[in-house]
Image (cartoon, rainbow, N blue to C red):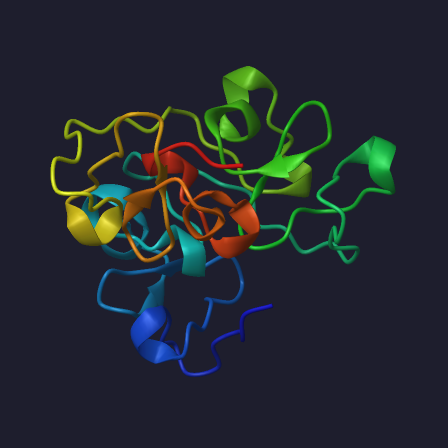
Length: 172
């Protein structure tokens, strides 16, 4: 697991530290809670903290103890909460897709974060780059967006365990 930030810094330029206490990691690598830190449109880094798709999007701070180690969550799974700012689907699985995260799809805010609106991107990647570092471009041709912001189909790109960004392409 990634180290939790103790100095308010986060992201790849800061030893891949993640923000504590359900904070967001800004595009410049700082932890915080305002829209400047939390909006995906402003470059929020979802791999290193919570992110929002719309201004002032309320999320629930999760402070329960049992964190899921098996990708399961919710009342039917020992009340486990999802790790790493993942969402808990109505079926009790952790993930970052709209199926997991949208309140309209039954996201369980007591066991992870939830969004009230779907992520929308205007730009399809033409240069093989994707994600918050690259103007929120999304991958085309059923490709995955790696944690480093590149489109592709390998396990490095597509596995959620390797940091695949489901907001910007397919993930496994």
